[in-house]
Amino acid sequence: MEITTLALDGPQPDIPALCARVSEACREGPPRQLVCDASRAGRPTLATVEALARMALTARSHRTPFTVTGATPALRALLDLVGLVELLGEPEQREPAGGVQEGVQPDDPPL
Image 1 (cartoon, rainbow, N blue to C red):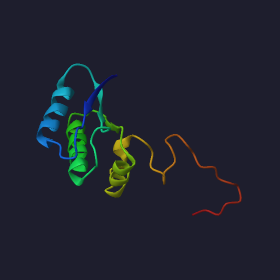
Image 2 (cartoon, one colour):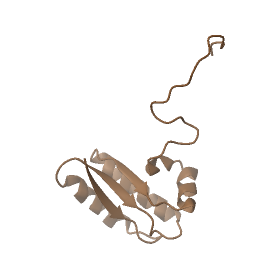
Image 3 (tube, helix red, strand yellow):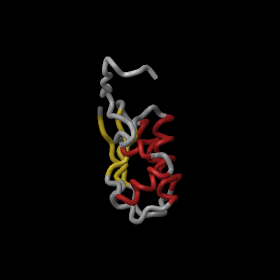
């Protein structure tokens, strides 16, 4: 699967232009994964979060995986606060990683 990287520059991104870039990348060639590099986004704002959410929604409408890289601790905290931490492509702290099964002891009472 081919990976296409888009950059998110500045705390006040041009959301329609970013979504147009996502749509264009999704229509090009073979199935791909989109990665948004947020390392140059600066101090994150709700506009930053909205841009990432809309980009993810646009990619999802094209059935294209979308993840965010280069997130600062402040952006990570903001994404966690609004429930979009899954955009970082990491399992949430409250959930076990995929494929992990919890062990059950024979003497454990049923739930």
